[in-house]
Structures are given as C-alpha cells and as structure tokens.
Amino acid sequence: MFARPRVVVSRCLGFTHCRYDGSMISAPEVRALEEEVEFHTVCPEMEIGLPSPRPPLRLVGEREPRLLQPATGRDLTDPMGEFVSQLFLSLPPVDGFVLKNRSPSCGIADAKVYSSTEKGTASARRAGLFGGAVRERFPDLPTEDEGRLTNRSLREAFLTSIFALASLREAEVSGRVRELVAFHARYKLLLMALGQARLGELGRIAANPDRLPVSEVFRRYQEAFRAALTRPLRRPSGANALLHAFGYVSDGLSAGERAYFLETLAEYRAGHVPLSAPVGVLRAWIVRFDVPYLAEQRLFFPFPSSLLSPADSGQGREPS
Ligand code: SF4
Image 1 (cartoon, helix red, strand yellow):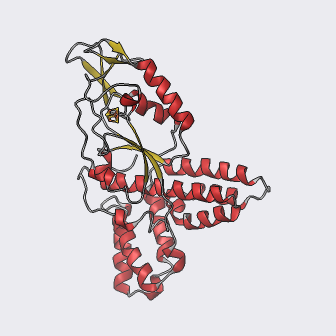
Image 2 (image 1 turned 180 degrees about the vertical axis):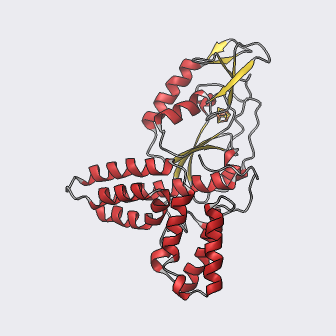
Image 3 (image 1 turned 135 degrees about the horizontal axis):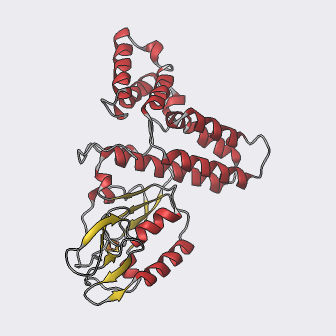
C-alpha cells in the first residue's frame, strides 16, 4: 500500500550511544517509525573522528559561527564542512530528515550560539552546522527535529510528506508516466486542500501535453509537488477539498448526519478543531459507503494507520 520513505536521522535519537556524554536520547516518536521507514543514521561529530564521550562542542560567533571544542581549543568547522560535502555526494535520494534539536551540529534552528568560548555567553540561536547545511541543500524536503515530532499536527504533516515523496520516487523509478498519472490521481484531494492553483499546475505537468521526455516530466512534477508540500495547508482550501469529498457520500446520509458534518467543517474552517476532525468523520463514511475514489485519496489515508498515535505534546503548533 505505501512506499517506504527513506529518512536520514541523527544517530543519537535512539540508535547509538554517541552523544558528547556517552548517552543516547530515548526518542520513542522516532523509533515508532522504524517498521515503515528506512532510516539512514548519521552522527556528524563521530564521522569527523570524535569519540563518545567527548568534550562538548559549541557554535561561536554570530555572523559565521565556528564549531569549536572549548576544552581542547580545536576548531572543527572545516572537518564538518568536508564531511557534509562528502555525505551529500554519496547520499541516495531521500525523502526527509529527523535531526537532534539544540545540537551545534544537528540542530535545525535552535542551537545556541556563543560570543566566545567562555562559560555563559550564549547570545542567539540558529541551525547547527550539519542541520543548517541540510536545510540549505534540501530546502524542499521535510526536515524536523525529535522535539517537534512530539506535536501531533507537525508529526502528521511530516509523515504525510515523507510517504508522499517516497511514493513519487517509486513512480519515478518505474519510468512510466502512467504511474505518475496514477500518483496524481491519489493525491488529487490533498493537492486541492493545498490550493487549487497547485492542483491545476501539477495536473498539467502530469498530462504532458508537449510530449516531453519522461525524465523531464518527473523532474518538473517533483519540483512543483515538493514546493506544494512545503506550504502549510490553509483552512479555506482544506475545507473546499473536504466539501468536494462530502459530495460523494452526502446522498446516503440523514439530515442530522449532514448537519453534523457541515458544523464540524465550519469549526475546522474557524480554527476551532484540527483537520483530523472532519477527516475522521468522512473516513468513517468512506468505509461505510465503500467509495473507491475516496478510499484511494491520500488526503484521508496519507500514511500507514499503525503510525497514527493519539499522543501529543499538547503544544498545539500548526505545521509551518
Ligand atoms: S546530535 Fe548529531 S552530532 Fe550530536 S550526538 Fe547526536 S547525531 Fe551525533
């Protein structure tokens, strides 16, 4: 049913005791994905030859921070840069990244930056050297840290993206445009929820009216599809897509059921409930009325149900 996403993950997130103090982070929200995701683990600090345990590193200097090891006086900025270049050259196509937060190497946004190697001089936060390089090299791939993945909305948005990209990658490997057309059909309502303009643009690319080579069609589609996924789902277009789906089941519903759905949809549109509220209601009716067109729509079934988890950090953040 689902292609297996390929995800690069910080090795200390439950895989190896490779942190500066010889520990490992227990990251159940990451390890829970293992059954369905192909992980490529990486520990940039060990890849540049540091042991575990080791004296900690820190970013020093606000404009172009250096990666320093205050206890030894070593500057590891250049070895880290060389490692990153080599990794990017050897990396197979991947669908996303999960990196350790707050790390001067892996952090994607929140590593402390110090003005000197002296104690207590943290002055700002930014991406670590590896995390920052990932964001620069792969700006349109889903990239999260383990802290953000404890938020249900962010986790589900991340899972939706990596499973979509893995499926598109699988279609590309087939080398057949008809696989792309089938992919586009499965993602039609999800794209509609992301915006009618994107749906139209991607539909035109998949239809290939200019008879472009298959590789060029996939390249264009992939670029536009990734760009579509980087945008947060907006409630008005999300509601439009759900209303469109509702049209397929509404004839079989009672007046009370129809009113209940429209009320839930209005609450979603107003920002009072998450997307999963109206989606959950529709999902039940898709099963009840056996509507194949909706059953194959990834808007309703975007990733394996085994990864659905009610656990939430409760911080209520929307994807951004
Ligand atoms: S945060 Fe990154 S560099 Fe630090 S231990 Fe984890 S994987 Fe290694």
